[in-house]
Image (cartoon, rainbow, N blue to C red; front, side, top):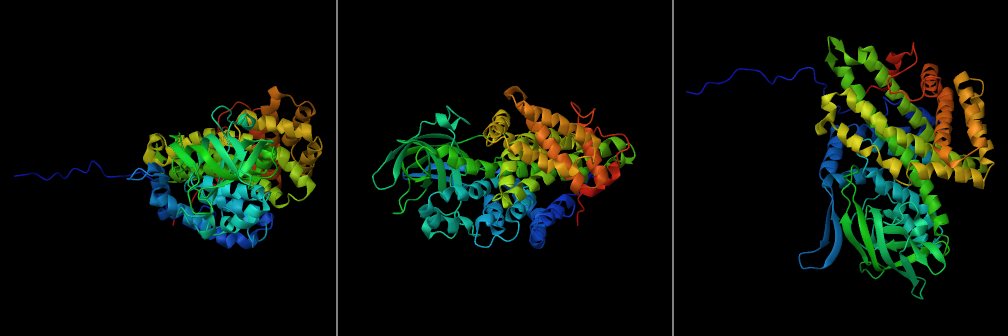
Length: 548
């Protein structure tokens, strides 16, 4: 006779409910306020719809599945024919389809961009990539490619309608036969990295306006996209080229995928090494002007680095705030324990500062036709990319710790965010490259200093800590040297964040940010160390998700 155990050793108590069915826009007022501030109010209903989908159990599960089932390379078919295909999990395609349906890849360039299109698109990208960051890469590259592609009007006329389409069409076909297109970028090589002038890929004219490319590219993400912008050495120097995967006659271009990278994070996205084995390409811009051409793409993708890092910070904050709202220890709800409230409150400060800064940069993109906004971006964009992306790993690590041991377990989702956190700091120029770009911008156009200071002027005298920081910033701007480039980038970003918060956030929030980041005790500290008397309850309530 078998005895039936009645022991209840696995009764689950004191665990938070799943963070499913919440609205990430509702618990993030900085986003809606920013979109409205810059003229995008008409898009808020659509952003709300996207946000609710992002917070749904369905979307969150697709994000998990896409990450835990990474893409696989198929170089040949069963008969030995070269196919160079990548197989993605169905969840990848689900995520891509929804993102493109909401225009996160190209709306600002389309026939009906609407008001404040870069701000609206940045807000949507921020909300949606909280679900899964890897599929943001092909969206960003498509977004960044179109302004550069317009330097080749015939190619732009042929491909831009497909690139701006809101149809996701992953099939491998000649671009003119597809309902929607995606673009990629293939720039770096193993011997050069960020030093693209050291590229060795060659481009030889064929005599009919096309070139044949031969070379090896070290990092090419989303290699199954339809069109790629790449750099190669033409007779006239380093030049940008556009290469379709399928040529106008329907044959496959000679783009050979060698392997997929085994990456720390961003695992849902395929990043590859590839060979150009006599691949056909067409020039984008003049021969020898390749770097000038790709600078436009770098600006766009650096904006997405800032927005994407803010999104990762927000995703981690939501997980941490939700956990502590439902978990008890030592007889106290964690969210009510002063040390924990200080940590969540500090994470909220970091998130809001990153968010208002990223939306301000997007607004500058919307107004880039004006000289001042273009000049502001020359300084603010590399500084913001440096600082916000550099902060993300530390912020995510602190959020992970809020879950204790549970946060270290993959099922919590926090390790995925932690593995993702360093990426944007490396992509489009690691820290030193980005900080030195700030010095290069100052050298090329010293008037950018006045534009930056004009941006900070509305809050002059509003807070003594910010005033002192601007004095330090002026001193660094007056003597910009390479060994201080990181400090300059840090000060530019922090002063911009502080000024924006003073103008657009609750007073207590702005004060806590300024004192903790730029005050006398604001350097070399850990997160969760806030000024004495900070109202952490309001900070925590402001960002805690409300599950349905």
